[in-house]
Length: 296
Image (cartoon, helix red, strand yellow):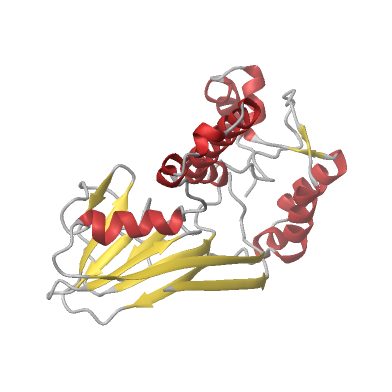
């Protein structure tokens, strides 16, 4: 079964928040099997001490089975972050093990605000594939194959038997054979693209986003390399000045953001790399601590 949930015109909100798609299942004594990068894990016994037990990035999918061996499989095609048992943002526990058969798919959050936007806005959709898990099946039958079939649906097929047994290859003229060879190469490239698409997409979507405010100091005398701002940065700065309670409470931040808008640049910590990889540690931070001048 395919499920699709749409978020339409969400308004930005700087207050800590998270949105979830909750899938509760009527399963007694649930057992979870989670497809993590490189392996399948059981959250009750396969998580190392000190690691995050509440929130996980799922590579393929997850199965939840009851004490009778039957259950359900879940694959979130657009949202890799999941929690099990209960929502897992802003939580940490050394011993947590999910006791209830509930899957929470994270649609959005602003827990990480370093190099990420301080809020989410706009419209998007999240697709989920559900399937029945039967007793006695192995991990490939119950989890891996259904999950990857959901992520990489078959778009085309090449019938070798029909072509060879119908004698088509013997009747082709040389130019037709060249065309067939070209089509084979294109088919191979298409299949290669289908296999690599999830990896490339996940890497691009999870690339660190540069923030609009970082280490802004009007009095700094450093020769900081800046980058031309984009329209989205202008909108974020104006939204922060207008809607963010923290910014409205601190005039120093208002002055800093207005100064940045006036300069027409985006000020970022990465710009310090112009002066060397150790510039922040050896020069900038000692100077800031000595002057004791920081934004609140």
